[in-house]
Length: 343
Image (cartoon, rainbow, N blue to C red; front, side, top):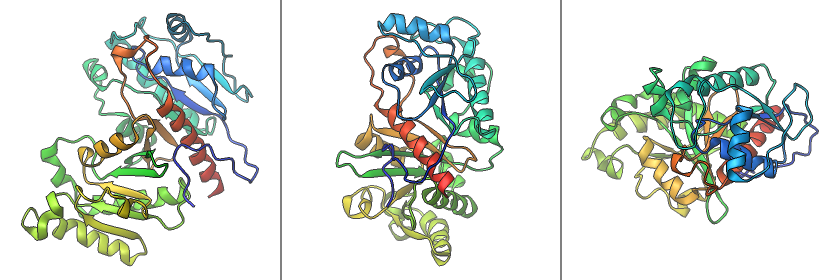
């Protein structure tokens, strides 16, 4: 049975894991607020928050909430502890500072190094602001690509997951991620698509305990190309790749028209959907699961999940946010780490 993305499953076998680590992300956004909300009701697994203590204490004061968690020390048994990383310049809610771009990336570097050394069982990332990092003169496409570079991973797969209103999981992975739309078709090559499907299939088995994953594959063009009348990518690229991988034992359905595949008759018997590009699949998932959705990077040597929303600069320090997506991301990372140990 495949586990729900947000359920904090208690495995029967005795497994001891290191704590998870969470990076607070952009200090002017709601990442610090989310960490403060965690302190009000710590999750059911050990967690280390990576952020500047003074930043969190100041934000907690602004929110009118207590914040008293111990400093992190290796081997700590505290359910929630803090690994303080100093800001470059003071941070105010809603006000971006280019000087803190290095702080954001240094936090990710420290967290990844800890995961690689098995100091941490997995990484949960708070939202970052890609624009301000680039304005600071640092080329930055996003978490997914940066983590791939840090870990030396040649290809990773971005997947969003969540529980729909009926309680069933929905997982949507992407064949391409942050590309201009005019570049998408050229990026969907047979080799790239085959590797993406292999990573997705392996991750569903290892991280989500799906014994024989069924994957729905979207076509690139309207109506999946309409037999070649609306584009030939399905005929020349997608269909041959699916045929080869089916011969190797993968359970793949498609290519399906993207405007009709998100129906119960397909989703009820599937473990994931592979969309061809970012805005083909993710609007559907965010509509169905917003507030309960997470981002997962597949193919990394470490576990990484994230919230499915941005920095929300206008809400930072206001108290008008929820931490549902973050708690789902934490539970999912813990389950994935458990599943990797069991596998």
